Amino acid sequence: MNPGDYDSTNVSNLALAQKCVGLLRLLHAVDCFPRGGLHGYYAVAAAVRYERIWVNLMRNNHDSSQISPPLDIAFAWFTHRQDPAAYFQDRQVDVVDAIHPDSKYAFKFGLGPEYIPSPGAFNRVWEAAAPSGHAPWPPPAPGSLQCNSLFAEPTVFAGRVAASMGRFTRMLRSWLRPQYLDELFLERAVERYVRFLQLHRDHPEATLIPTADIALMWHTHLGLSREYAEVCKEMFGTSAQGEVNLWRPDYLDITDQCKLAALYVDTARLFRNKYEQAYDSHETAWLADTVPYPLATTGSPLAYALRVFDDNPDQKDISLICKDAGIPEPQPGEPVVRNGAHALYLTWLAAHRAMLAYEHSLMDCCWTRKTICNVTLGDVTSSLVSIAYFLELPDIDTHPYLLAIITHNRYSTSTLFYALAGV
Image (tube, rainbow, N blue to C red; front, side, top):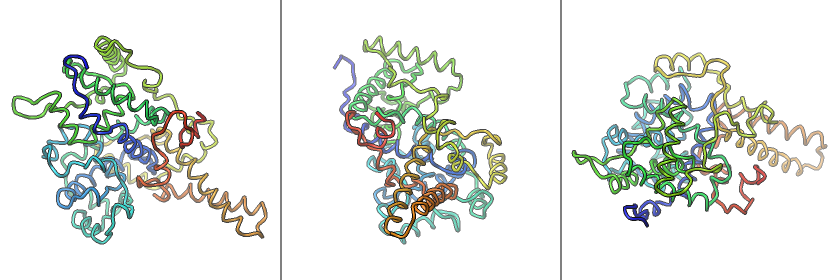
């Protein structure tokens, strides 16, 4: 270790290379959110549900080993933690506050029985915190009585959280590449992230732009809000008022692409000068937004079916609510920003349902081949249609599709992503 370098043991002990898988699962599920995705109305609803219901529930009855937030609330909570100073101020917490997520459960989501061993007790806790008649899942339909009661009272930070949610969904496009589940690659990413932290300590006034691999570790670490604050205190110290100097990812606020590119070049120069190593490579660089996921291109055999994620029967009500909340929404006909995980999940779902239907048909020896094909196609089609109604979604992190997202050795092709990518 060079003189002045930070002892990375504290960061290494956090096992970020393993915990980032939880973040990737969360982002996969968010990319599959139907009815136009977690944008516009559903982003606002998620942030308000988080502030009005989940914050109170955690403060009064929080046991992260027993209670896991619904998908939309989990993403709003994650987004809030990405701005650490604002999170501490908005929540009025300190480093030891119990409402910080336990690092073992920081990216958990969904209402499965493994998280709610006593549904009756959970329902009572939820009902005590939520507006009358407001169910945990799915989110209330726009214009419904539950929607009206949810928005009946003013909020403090929900609008800011909702406006920030889109910043993180786009990152998954780069993180869908196979190397972002490779064990050795992720371990190197942790090492590079520690060096990135040291670079900020050396140049606190500079706006540093992370590579895609460093960003994955940084945003995973930010999701562990208590542990992130501890590392910031150790590395960056405290202010004259005794407050921890929490490093915020300011690069997310930059919308000028030319400025972003120039700052990236400056970051690469500082990194190269300090460590005498190249800052990025084809594996660690960000993918351009114009590069689509292969299964989500217009020429993909799935292209006709992907609209099930964006069809929305409540568009008129959504437009009114977004206008009142000051949240922009996609214009009619404008494609919803997705990263490709929705196409990957649709492939998995169609194959899974086709397999089940085909196996069931084989039990009936009287079925003809034509009947088997029709039944199989019927089951697959119904599963696709059900997505628009919040059915058959990967809305819990123990969903079989999400459990297939695991780290692996690069030379193994047994995982979902290497199999589909043909690597």
